[in-house]
Amino acid sequence: MKYQYDYDVKDELMALLTEKANFSGVNVLSHYMEVYRNGKNPSTRNLIKFCIYKLSARLSDRESKNFDCDVSRGVIESFPQTYSWLKNSVIEHQTDRNGNVIPMKYQLRTSDTVYRGDTMTSIWTTLKEYVKLKTGTHMIDETDSWELFILRNHKKVDLSYHAGRFIQLGHSIGNFMPVPPGFNVGRSNYGEWDYWDLTLCQIHQWYMDNPGHSEYINNRALEILFANDRNKQTSILNCQMWLESFETWKRFVQQNYMESFVDKNGVPKKFFKSHSLNNPLPTTIKEFEEFFKTVNECIMVRGKRIIAVMQAQGYAEQQPQNSFKDKIDKINPSGRISTQISVLKQELRTNPLETTSCLLCYLSKIVFIFLAVVYYIHFLMIIGFEQTGEVYLQNIEYMPFRRYTDSEFWLIAIIIFSVLFLCISYTRKNKGLKRIGMFLVLLMIMILCILPVIYITVTNAIQNTEWFQTWLYSDYMGNTGAIKLYIRIYGIICLLFTVIPIVWLFIDSYFRTYIKYCLKEILLPLIAVPYILMMAENKNGLIFMIIAIGIILVIGWKRRCPICGKLFALKRVDEQVIGSKEIFVKVDVEQKGDNGKTYTTTQYVPGVLEDYDVIYNCKHCGCESRKHRERKVAKI
Image (cartoon, rainbow, N blue to C red; front, top):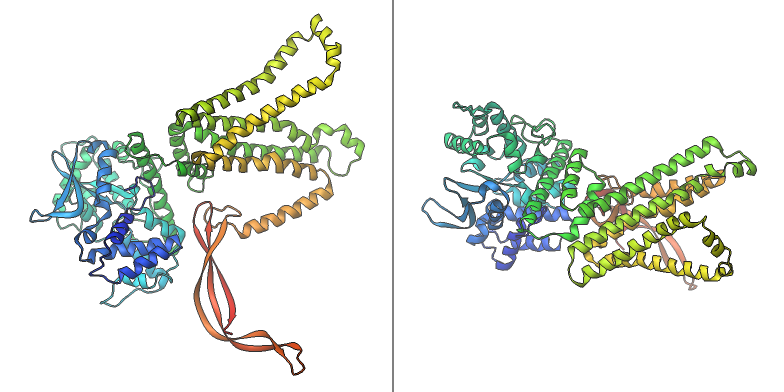
């Protein structure tokens, strides 16, 4: 099992099914395995994979039919590595009532009880209701199953990006939890209450009802949670003993990594506004989307926290190729600000240099664009457009282009520091010749940066001395060619030692994503903004710039992602025909006449009117969006 925050444990089953190629019991799965492998749409593939996972319980092969994500070996093995209260537990096979080992299912045994994995928020109950709403089908034949119905109609199920992401994250490490006996089945109420926010609300209430855990235990909250459990009293007792071991609500949240599931006051969040035990299921598309977005965010943040703990303890490998992309997403937040800040604080603790580099690049762009706007507004207030050339010359210090370029030194300094932080991180993460080489480059950069400072300081100190004045006006100084040569050599050396680390980091796969991001961030404030200010200093230039920027924004808006809101984000990846009807299509047909000349005639020929969706993927957040289109297609 891969220990990544968004790794879908169902992939373990898909690998097992591919290896065994035994679909006895549900032979149709062999076809849908092929559909899954050839699929391009991530959300649709997740949907197909989930239905295959559900139907695998009907297979004849014992290993395939018994595979269950939340009690699979990889998941159960991760619990002692992550949860301090399970450190001394022992992993073992589950057994049936007769004591026979159940293949592919595992549990943890401690000195006094056993713990099994539980999927905190179930996928199936929500997905089934979502499919009913999307397809308009609320009843199926008694001989059919919803899993097969969805597989047959997977092209018609218009799955949103967040819904597809939930199907993936629902079986990721952030949505699994070790629980005592009876907890999993007891709290679910046949699937209707299988939502972690509802469970967490009752756990929170239990701690509120039992401050300090007096001799009398108030289990009213647990009685509500396990109201429909066949073994109600046993489940309540097991849960009570489990909750008592944490002593307080705060410790329960901390030791089980539940921070993303509670608000700043420590109260459990609701997955959608009206979510409760009396109203457990979303009923509208708006509620479903709110549910998917909220639960996905909670699971992802918790999953990243768990993986960070495992990495710190050496149980999981670092995932460098995704880390910079994650940091960039965090610095450009599209989720809740409080959550993004908490994640950013965590990143600053674990990877301070890399995260600081990202922050410097992003914040420098924001600050310098703001400065450009301030300079331009000041220019309009002091000078304006309707002034003579003399007025411009008298107030040249207020010209926005001049003021901005004077301050660009600080922007360049910030960029240098950002790259230096990254170079230092590179030196720390590598060994041998790579470390020595980058250390020497860093040392040379620091010397080149210090030399001008030393030169200015020394010059100011000795400029009034007699020997310096004599040397300054000597014949040697009259030969400016030598001085120009020294300056040129110094400039070439500075340029080389600026380019070398950038090229070096580009070659390294770990740092390549960041350097691309860094160059993209500095392009606007360093190059584009000065030229915009220069052109906007006269009225004609301003009009031209407004038209050009307006055209660019219109094009960018057409390719804007509806989820993260970023311009120029959508990339066309596919199209899907929704429906069609027979029509006659007007076409131009070339024909040859008796005299051999070619002439064109207009005719109506049989054709179809196709309704289709153009499918786009966002290159930033990965979400899928669709735009509806129509086209007429001739059959000849």
